[in-house]
Length: 210
Image (cartoon, rainbow, N blue to C red; front, side, top):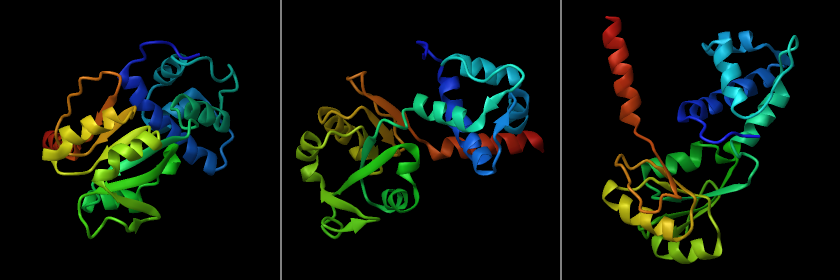
């Protein structure tokens, strides 16, 4: 059973475990030791055992981990089997790119609707998902309980749209607006995605390597 107060560092490594185990499973690997798993992921065996111990007992001494079983266990820990739903606010370049190229279902989400203000977009479909007027957002959320709202709209609209999502009962917000969102409702989780952060970290590392 999952322990309370699992560190954010451990939580952020779980998708890496899931992704790596998926690759191993697809390659036909049936079992793997913590040392072999750690070596392939550039982690120590003790780090892997420590991370997994936050959620229960996995693997057997002398055998290691069954790849398929561990992958399924991590998927369950990540909530990938809970049939989450998501809506996108903003069908500009980034929103459309996510709708056309990001496989929400592989992460356990179903993208149910998108919203925009542009009359040229409203009423059309992008990758099989209907684009609705943002005026319909509040009524849609009342009749379609939604797990996550994805913000891919101008940063000036981020805060008011986030407030509408919270009022509509979402559990989390995936924020691509390049601005930090502060919510009064602490029960709603915000994941802020800043593309520049990753690029600047890369900039630092290549500068240090010179």
